[in-house]
Length: 230
Image 1 (cartoon, rainbow, N blue to C red):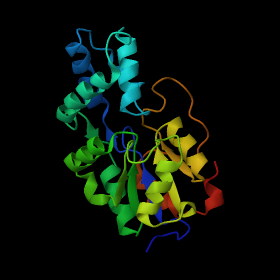
Image 2 (image 1 turned 120 degrees about the horizontal axis):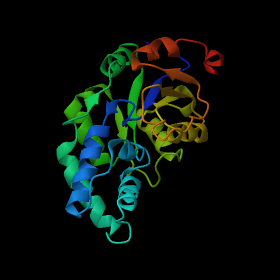
Image 3 (image 1 turned 90 degrees about the vertical axis):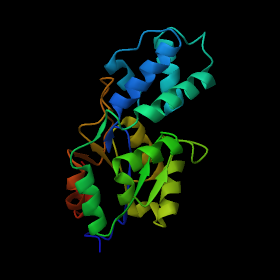
Image 4 (image 1 turned 30 degrees about the vertical axis):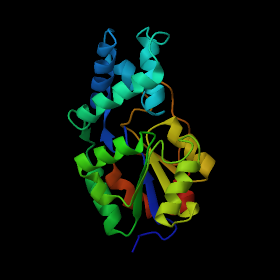
C-alpha cells in the first residue's frame, strides 16, 4: 500500500531525469553532422538542445552547424536516429538513486510510467537496455499521442494507461518543459537538481519540490500535499 493515498502514481521524464543520455545523444548528433560534412558541435551546445524532442534537437544541431538550409530535416532525423540506435546506452548511464527509487516506489504500491519527448521506439529500447523497463508500468513517447510535452496530453494519456486520475499523480522531470506540462495537466511537479534543464543557463520555473535523488520520492510523497508547495 502506498504511504500516502493522495498519490497513487508517478510519471517520470527520461533524458536528464532517469538516464544521463547526453553522451549518447551528443555522439549520435556528431556522427550525423560528420555524415553531412560538418564538424561535430561542442558537448554543452548539444546538451542544451535536449528536452524538446528529437526533431527539434536535429533542427537546432543543423542550424548551429550551418546546415539548416542545405540538409532536409526528415533525412537528417533519420540519420540521427540510425546513429542513436547504436550509441544509445553505450556511453550514458542511469543516474544514481534512480533504480533504487523506482524499486522503493513499487514496494510502496505506486504505479510508475515514463513520459518522454523521445520517440516511443527509441525510448523503449533505452529502457530495456538500462533495465528500467522492469520497474515501469507504462511508456508515453514523443510520438505516442498527437502532441508532446509541454502539452498536457501525454501526461493525461499516461494517467489513463495507469488507470489513475490526474489528481492522484505527480510528474518528476528536469526542465521547464516538464514544469509547463505538469501545470497544464494540473499535476504537482518535482524537478531533479542534476538534470539538463539548466544547461542553457535559464532558471527553472517554480516547482513543487526540488529533489536530489529519486530515492527521496517515497518520503516526499508521504508528506501532506500543502507542504509540497515550496
